[in-house]
Length: 206
Image (cartoon, rainbow, N blue to C red; front, side, top):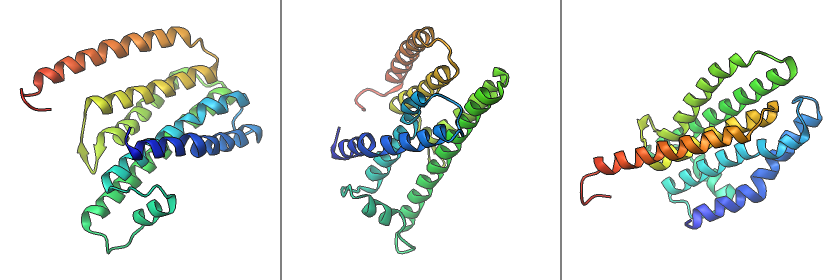
């Protein structure tokens, strides 16, 4: 919980969440999303979490201590005066933002089709595959390099779980049995991963 994390956490909770809530609420009230307005609260969490993760990652990479959004935007849009490494970092941020936008769009289209047209839930399988690929690109890929760590794996799991729970809530499925299965899988999987990585780590290294 360094200064960047605290600043982005407050920004996400105090601004991004409510802006996302209002935007989704507008879509629901306008009839674009045929779901209850109560679902705007959990759905707003998805863009909020995506914004928080991207901003913390980007500010740490670029060492941006100034929390002013305009300063961050100016830094991201600086022209060719910025060194090549900075250009690469901006490209990575843009790629992650595009992937996150596509992910949210695919998920919302699936929910809309399920609720408005009662499509067969067999389409959830190709949908979750596409979402999983996009989510893996966002979390595990930096500039074309694969970086799989325990922390990133936990973030991936939590976001995947969040999307799955939102699907169950939107479609009216019972959530409690799902949460029990999720908790069991999470505890067992990450315990195995943690033990495996500790054994692979050479003695005397972090």
